[in-house]
Length: 553
Image (cartoon, rainbow, N blue to C red; front, side):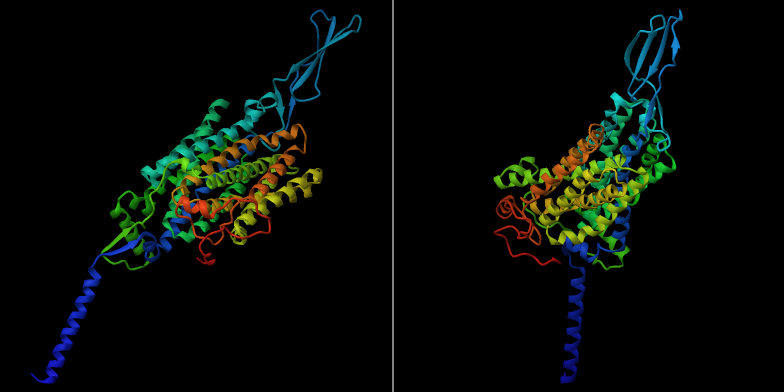
């Protein structure tokens, strides 16, 4: 064999070996971790479409949270008294008069000697001013005077339902899937919401509002969890922000819908039947691949990524195994939140912040009826301000979690305190209320981020659930604060400013977590997130930690 023939033969063998190597590489089984799979094939137009529909779920929460501002509205009333008359024997003149809308006075005058005797009676019938609210639960069931507290109680019952939903339905999602929880929650919200529109008596209405809150909690939480678990870790903060912005859109639309049709039964029917739109999600919304992998459903998770690859125009090798990253053993005991000394301090600081931010936010939202001017215009202004605030939230939080929360509470304190001296000036009160709402709304996002970064992997979900539940308790108390205006017109603002002061002081004990690695164990969180008093200008992070990550990381 000549040297030339030998060269050609070796070249052919080399080419064959190279082809075999490529073929073998193409067909061998690859192993991708979940986040790696998301970045390679599971992030693109398909996820953006899913996110678009899921963030709309927050609108249901906005409609129902603000519903009682209009459904329980009262434009004023006049006591209906019996007509003046004389006694059967024409010996006495009986007259009726009133100084307020809750009591009237019956005066009997003896025509013979002109002596008189007076008695006070509670008013039982009223004529309502329907210029602003044509029909509300107040006008239908006479929830005024000694029954006025029932309006605020309905809001509290709704928040208690939300509280129960956050606790109970979270376990349902972990056991049976986010998609199923979304379906069940939507069905409950739909049935209870539409049913409330046909309530024959107040008690039925209040009970159904409890179940509306229960369902809305599951609907919003399941939608947010699904959206977060479809995407990359760095997308979750933006998703939460966009979700809050759709909530603010519903805030604005609530007043517009009631303005166009100021009948509480019609309005309740509209926001209840709106959930029919979400029922369609069950037919095209896939289950969370992260949940499927955690339950050993590898084939179902793989199907999701193959669908994503096709929709996103990306190549996915034919033989791929997708696995969850190795994580430390997960704890499911609430006691883990307070098991160690420093974690107990963190829990106390965060519990107070969750409660206060919800108390101030919902208190200011419900207080819109006490502001001068049109409630519809005021509601639209405050909703628009909140929408802009969420848009700026992502930039402010980069200065640090503790400074952001402290600054927000301090400005809210100043705005609410200034209103005490501005009452009587329409524009001054409106501008100060706008500033307060603009500032306090993003605090929910800041506290959410701080909770995620303070707690270790084992207790992170438990901490978020506990914090959200405490927020609902704050929201349950808040509806009663605007009613204190009947005792003193400045009292609601004194309460809001005082509570904001407590929140600002509490924030100074918050460990700073900006640009710090997330703790993976309770021991690590105990060591690095030390609770101690910090000056407002002290932006240093926790002590004894790994070098800080850069901002992009």
